[in-house]
Structures are given as C-alpha cells and as structure tokens.
Figure 1 (cartoon, rainbow, N blue to C red):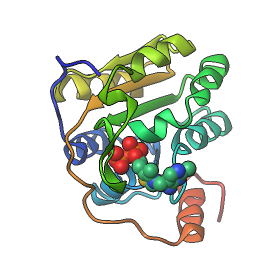
Figure 2 (figure 1 turned 180 degrees about the vertical axis):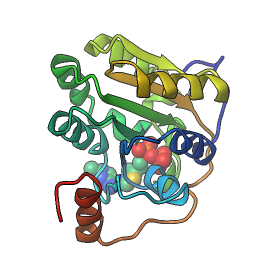
Figure 3 (figure 1 turned 90 degrees about the vertical axis):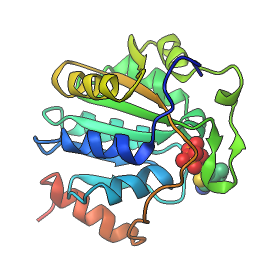
Figure 4 (figure 1 turned 30 degrees about the horizontal axis):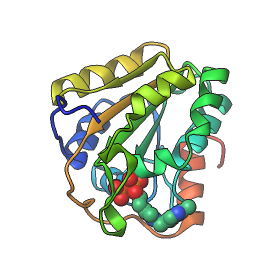
Amino acid sequence: MPTNAKVMNRFDLTKRLVAKLTHGEAVVAGIGNTNFDLWSAGQRPQNFYMLGSMGLAVPIALGVALAQPGRKVVALEGDGSMLMQLGALGTIATLAPKNLAIVVMDNASYQITGAQKTATAFKTDIPAMARGAGLAQALWAADEPEFEQLVARALAEPGPWLIAARIDQEPGIGTTDRDPARIRDRFMRGLGVRE
Ligand SMILES: Cc1ncc(C[n+]2csc(CCOP(=O)(O)OP(=O)(O)O)c2C)c(N)n1
C-alpha cells in the first residue's frame, strides 16, 4: 500500500461514485461494508449486493459486463475480498471487457470481522498485482479529486480499469436488505432482463 495516498472514507467515496452514475450503470458491491455503503449511498435497481461470500463482486461484475457490453459495470470490493479472488484479474485481462471497472476499497484489513490485517498492511500492492495480471489501467487514487477523475475516466473511456483507494477503518453505514432472491430480482429488472 503506498504511503503517499491519502486515507479516505469509503462512504464518502461511494457517494461520489454514485453521483456520477447517469446512464444506468450496473454496480456490484462485495460482502459487508462495500455493499452497506452502496446501499446507504442511495438505492438503484442496477445495484447488486453480494451477501455471504468474499471475492465474488468482481467475477459477478465480469459476467454482467460480458452479458451487456453496452452498459458500464462497476465492481466495488474490499482488499481482503479482492485478495481472495485474484485469479479473476487474469481472466479480466484476457477477456478485456471495455465496460468494466473495479474499485478496491483498501483499509488493509478484514474490517468487518475484527480488523485483522490483510497482506496490504505489509508489502502487497493490489494495483501493482493487477498490472502484473495484465490490467494496464490499474491505479491508486491519491485523493478524492483524483478518485473522481479516475471514476469519470473509467465511465467514459474503454476499460478494463482498476482504481484503488486507501481508506480508513470506519465500518459501513447501515445494512442491506438480506433477501437474496429480492436483490437478484430487482437487479435483473434493473438490467432489463426480467419483467
Ligand atoms: C469465503 C469467505 N471467507 C471468510 C468469510 C468471513 N468474512 C466475511 S467479511 C470478511 C472480511 C472482509 O474483508 P474486506 O473484503 O477487506 O472488507 P472490509 O470488511 O475490510 O470492508 C470475512 C473474513 C466469508 N464471508 N467468506
């Protein structure tokens, strides 16, 4: 984790991201804090909230991006969950969906289960790993204005993108609806694939 990146706040960044979504972009948020903050930032039918399993926001977002190439798709994931599913980065680099962006909220910990340190608290740098996987556009956001600039580019320019933000230890705000079938149905209707 770079020490020169500002420590930001996940809910603040999530609100900044959601404010830029004006074209029905799909957002797939990972377990726990990332989806709690997405939920609290304002519910949209194009939001999907992963419950229960770490590491699945990115693979689900990849599937959505491949199924609907005309729609931009954003995956929001914590560092612990991203580290659990690194193989997805190689798949994304290989398939190179132009409409996919990954945002990693890196608090260097498994915050929600007791703030145990992840590898990013030591030497591991997720954007550098993503570049190694073949994602050329994998960057740290130095501060909030740069985060907004990178999100705007990811929504306007061909991807795939990975944007990482160093964040504080604040828990997520609120909590999601815990009904997986309802989450799935609402998302499918939001994507226009279910009546
Ligand atoms: C496969 C799997 N392993 C472990 C857990 C238990 N667990 C749930 S959330 C979590 C930590 C998530 O860490 P991170 O993705 O970095 O998000 P943060 O809590 O820091 O926002 C853990 C260990 C789980 N739900 N699924």
